[in-house]
Length: 83
Image (tube, rainbow, N blue to C red; front, side):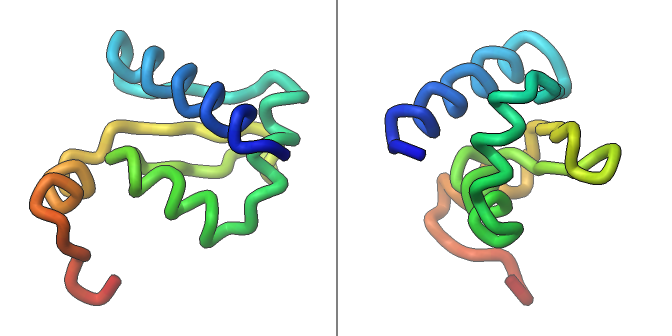
């Protein structure tokens, strides 16, 4: 996986979340790209962008949501309590 691939995925998710409350990643090649990240890296990828990620259907589908708490913490450059 290259940083360009992850950057393209970030752009896609961001665009979708600017129009809708959730973004479903179901296309096999996109799911495979994100499955290359371990659970911690995937959560960090989502948190860094102010999103929340949920794995569905045994990992065959990923769902991203805007997370206002994470977004506020990112703007204030601090981490959540217990996180």
